[in-house]
Length: 143
Image (cartoon, rainbow, N blue to C red; front, top):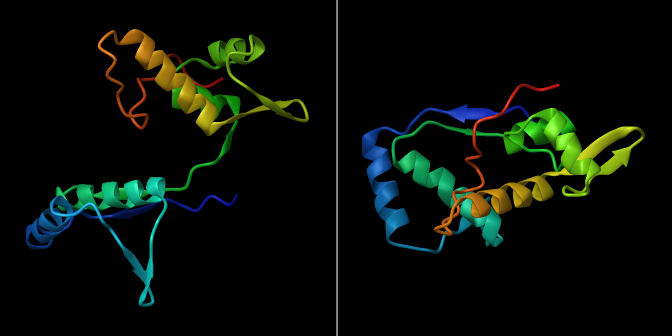
């Protein structure tokens, strides 16, 4: 997978943000048009587009970037907010599934995010789960 450079855009001016906010608030259906052809997005893609539009309608600047499906141990540790050595212990114990590319460990982003959600559920007795996009701050640095 080729990862493209992030793209940033400034916040919308209030006269453009307000109508967008009203439109998003009044409908659950979002249709994407490319060259005049309507495309219905799968649920996760639609949620991402609606989130992007909602942030713009709130007057936020946004940045869009690609993410890798397979992560290095350093990338996975940073995503999970844990130290590199603790992540290695989790893979050695089989708690986090790992693939080997030669002698290098690779972890699937979805597996790390699932593990992180399970940890957050265990630590929150109310059962409320924070969004996966807001992991806790990292313990230690990258190794």
